[in-house]
Every structure is written in structure tokens, then in C-alpha cells.
Amino acid sequence: MKLDGKDTKIFELMRRELDREEYSLILIASENYVDEDILATQGCVLTNKYAEGYPSRRYYSGCAYLDEIESIAIERAKELFGAEHANVQPHSGSSANMAVFYAVLQPGDTVLGMDIAHGGHLTHGARPSFSGKMYRAVSYPVSARDEMLDYDEIRSIAHKEKPKLIIAGASAYSKVIDFQKFREIADEVGAYFMADIAHIAGLVAAGLHPSPVGHAHFITTTTHKTLRGPRGGLVMCTADLGKKIDSAVFPGIQGGPLMHVIAAKAVALKQAMTEEFREYQRQIVLNAQHMAKCMSDLGFRIVSGGTDNHLFLVDLTPKNVTGNDAQVALEASGIMVNKNLIPFDTRTPNVTSGIRLGTPAITTRGMKEKEMEIICEMIDQVLRHLNDVSFMEKTRVKVRELCASFPFYKRIYDI
Ligand code: PLP
Image 1 (cartoon, helix red, strand yellow):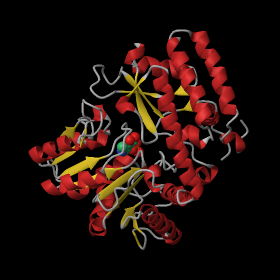
Image 2: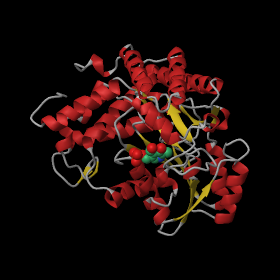
Image 3: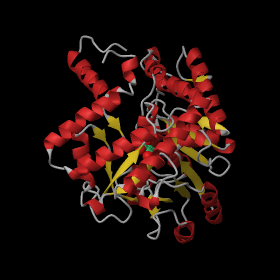
Image 4: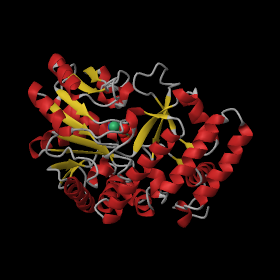
């Protein structure tokens, strides 16, 4: 990729974004840095080609190489996760989830997913999304006692509401999810069970979180979070549901697949089979756990008391700071986090009492426990100097220095 060209406006903005990514601390749990192989694969001629259909069943001529690429991506997904069937065409995690709804539900059917205010995703039944608009969505909370999933409560909601689809998975939940229990509950009420592992896919692939394979009818994921591939989606399911999911993805909800992205998914799935990737995932979890401990030692409250995965929620109430104010001040200091509702939050989603911190991106850069301590110290200090612009500028310089000692794209671009 050349960062110059005729469209100077766009190329200049790309150059600035490259600089921002290289010299900021990315603690947004859903973000990561892909390597040059994935960047190159996404920026290649495969973007030119229409390939509606599936390998050997295309609507266009000239798909021979694309058939091979998609077949390899499918086989790698099946091998990595141990799934019976995989569809690599969903453009995003949301499309993957929509495909499952489309495959097995009728509009108006009941779905049961985790409350978005307690860590669930928009597509698990939240009102503004298709999942809450076209279906009768009910939700389960985390327990007020320990802010963890309460399977007895989920069971009793399922028995009362009789959903046709039960969804496990979250955007902001730091504890292990018991997929086997979810399947038992789904069987008791005759529901399909979908596990959305968008956030934890890398951990599942590395054996650091129990796999939903063997329990879930459908497994959906994004490919760009802990899995560290291109931005996109993936659905897996048992063999008997393969035809249903394939026709739900195409022609159900999508047209032509993004073949450059599918090729990049194949590259990422191969990377995820290596020992190096498993070691990377182990360090993500160690870093998250160490960071949660440091934040707690600094007087912050960690939702659910800690983390088993790559992220955790920080309750800022003891510091009398809102999530939004924290996000703004930290961004000005070069530290990227997102404001996040905490369970039973009394503030609105635009203000929030918490922030979500995640370690996939900084771990990709090679940062370890020692850097987690430095980062937590910086976060604490910035939140103590909320309106002090010069303090934020000084922190920004320190952040740049720290990032410069863990170069990532500087290895391949002139920045
Ligand atoms: N599922 C979960 C649990 C997520 O956290 C996300 C995104 O953050 C998605 C699905 C949707 O992915 P996308 O943004 O690719 O549509």
C-alpha cells in the first residue's frame, strides 16, 4: 500500500490515521492491529470480482481461483474451531447474526439475549436493531449480587418467555460463559442456541475459553477482534443446518461476497493455528488480568471483580468521573478507551459510569505486564487532571514515547 497518490485529501487522512494508530495506546477491546499480510490481501485485485453463490456454484464466470480461496477459508475455519460447517461470507458480525435469525426465525418470533445494558450486543435483541424491531426480544441481565451470568435466572426467563432462539455472548462481559448450560436451557424450551463469540474468538481458538462447538447450533463471530483478522464475520453450525445458513447469507441477506476480505480471513485463520498465536492469546489474558489488578489497586472498582478474558469494565463511580468525561480526557492524552454502561448503571448510554478496557491491540505490539502498570498509572493520573489540558499534552508525549518503543506499522511504513 502506498500512502501517496492523486487523491491527496484521502491519502493525507490515511497517513494521519496511520500515525494515530502507531502512536496511541489502543485499549478499545474490539480493536486490534492486523499485520502486513492481511493488509496486503485486503488491498488486492480480488476486490474486483463478483462471485455470488458458493464455490462451484457461482452465478458469474471466472471464479475458479476464488472458489479455491473460499474453500480454503471454509476448511481453515472448520479446522481451527472444530466446526462441522462454516460460512465465511458475512460482511460483518452483525450480518452473521442476522443470517442466523433469517435462517431459523419468522418475524415476531421470540429471541432471548443478554441485555445490552449488561454487556450484550445490539444484534442480540436491542430495540434500535433489526433484532429488536422485527422480533419479540426479551433479555437476561447479570446478577445484581456478583455482576455475573445467573443460569438459574436465565433458565426461569427462558421457561416463561419460550424463545425460539437463545443467544449467549457479549461485547462487555469479562467472565467465562458456560455454553453447555445455555444449550441445556435451550433444549428444555425447544429453542435453537446461538453462541456469538465475536469478542473471544481468538481465546476460543487458542483453547483459553471453553468452545461452544458441540453445544451451540450456530456460532457467529467477527474476524477482527481477538482473532486479529480483517474486518468481517463468520458463521459456523452443525452440518444439518449448513444449507439453511448458506441460503440465509446468500441470497437471503447479502449479494456478492467480499472476496478480498474472504482471502484475508483465510490468511488470519492460518495464523490463528500457530503456537505464536496461542502464546499471543495467553499474553492478552495475562495483560488484562494484570491491568484489572493494577486498576483495582489504584482505587477503581472492577465490574464482576476481575477478568477471565481480554477485557474488563471499570466502574468510575469511586472516582466521581463519568465514562464520557474519562473517554474524552484519555483520548486527548493519546489513550483510546470507550465509555461503557456498567450493570445497573444509573447514567445514560451517552454518559455512563464506566469505561471498557481491552488488551488485544497493545499485546499485539508486544507490551507486557510492566507496560500495563505504566498505562494504568497514566490513566489514573489523567482522570485526576480531568480539565488540565497541559497535563494531557504532557501525557500525550509520554504515550508517544511508549508507543515508539513498541513499533508496529513503523516496521513497514515510513512514519
Ligand atoms: N457480536 C458481538 C458480541 C460484538 O461485540 C460485535 C461488535 O462489536 C458484533 C457482534 C458485531 O460486529 P460488527 O461490528 O462487525 O457488525
